[in-house]
Length: 86
Image 1 (cartoon, helix red, strand yellow):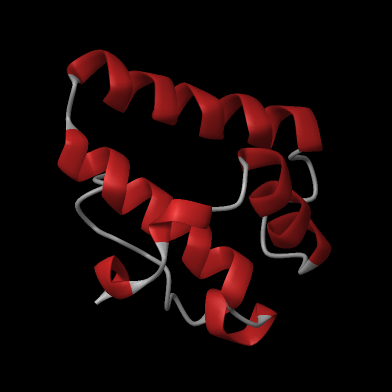
Image 2 (spheres, rainbow, N blue to C red; image 1 turned 180 degrees about the vertical axis):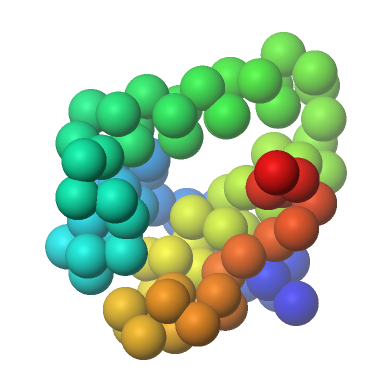
């Protein structure tokens, strides 16, 4: 479970996007700023909903990206279907 990770020190959206783009796991058209805008938008949405579960899960997702290899990320180890429903 991703929830067991240390969510208190989740990486920022900037750090997570750096890693995903560095791994070449996103579309080549996706710029750093687009990735960060999307990530921060999702964080803001969960905060506006006051949905602590989703906030914690998203922090765990960012922590997973920060602590995983490119291969693990590509294999979907950090994917949480409750956060990414489409």
